[in-house]
Image 1 (cartoon, chains in turn purple, brown):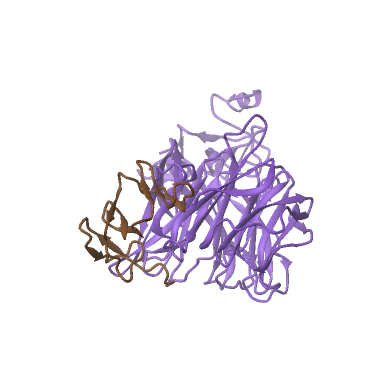
Image 2: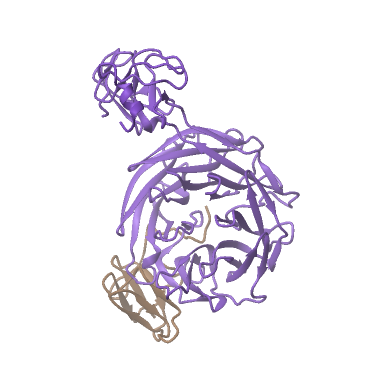
Length: 507
Length: 86
């Protein structure tokens, strides 16, 4: 109890009689509002903005996907920087900056930074500056990385003819951070680029680079082999976006033959160890057979979520699964797997992206059974578990296959922004999630209560006798929509004493 | 030729006899120490070893073969060619 209103709620002989916001049925699960009233538990809601075309009339269906393209969100300027292999312009490496206003992005003019067929474009912040990014790209296996200036929606290059940083580069991913060993107020940035090295048996390799305030050049160090195993062709390296000062991490997979199929081992590693030779790789799981592991970092819980695609030689139920990783002082604890999408029959759903924030992850994917609609599902992280909720449809048009969408989190507007390929265009949509209020459950009404009227509510520790249909001596949980069920949820309600009574003690 | 093998004798690298390989307790440096080709971070002198004077198999590829201390090569049954996309 924190105020006079709360004390007044208990004035009637110690019975809790709060005022209702909205009409409450007898036996309704409720939450406490900040003004002292109680309200029915409300289910998770989610909505997405109308899908918007930002690049039309492309030459094929692979218009913007994470294989060759990337996006980076700047919370300070509320802009997004996009880099892509422009298939309407001979695959030239191109960048464009957009300003976000609500659910609309207004783009400036594109800049061609590589006038040759370019692949695997990547973009991240340059931590030596407040107004620059690092863009990396690959031309015929040669890796380039340079600093670019951002001013409003204008992007300009610092160096017209950058030199290559490495060769044999396949499927690179990039992450940047601030060098913790900075000097006074002078900032130095770190750039890590991981890739499968075709000159070295596709072994997992990391190239550490530095940036500083005295030159805008990206200076490469010695390539480091962090895994002397071949990175599987269908298992991209995945690294978390810049989350300074959180640990930078990597996930990748490697396959080996087994009887009846091919096993996949997913590894998780810490960037900080790349140059130290400590080889701190953790085996997340040895799956029957999976592809395309994707990883997201959820900052409020400090956890990593690794989602992946199972295939027909893997789990019998074909369901899409994920793991939750907790990293504490370098020790990695793995829990799961947790199913994030069911599939009645095998249909590969390799095209998905995952983004985390506010204790949730959002997975956006192409559902080939619906057919090919864009869907998304939110998962709530609670302790060492992820609880996935209802699936929503974001775009009912048919999406092309083999296009992996890209996501960023717009922290200013509390929305995930998803960039994906249409049939011959590129689209984006903003996803706004409001989680269920079930985790704030405080009790169950003992009577029907009209809006604005006071009524009796059973709190934890008491027995409520306004429920029906329960199974005696069985544990019940509050579901996202407020219903009581034996299905485990993050919110335990209590144990049924009879079909019509429950001891609200939690589990 | 000489090969670096892991704890299970899996042949990870195969280089010429005169190629510089420096194994330490933390890592393995490959190439001219003044200008390394690359550094191996997941292998070191504790979990790998260097076998010298071996004859290269015609179709050697990283992790495809095991090599015993006497230089005998054995095909790894669980090896899948990573260059082939299923």
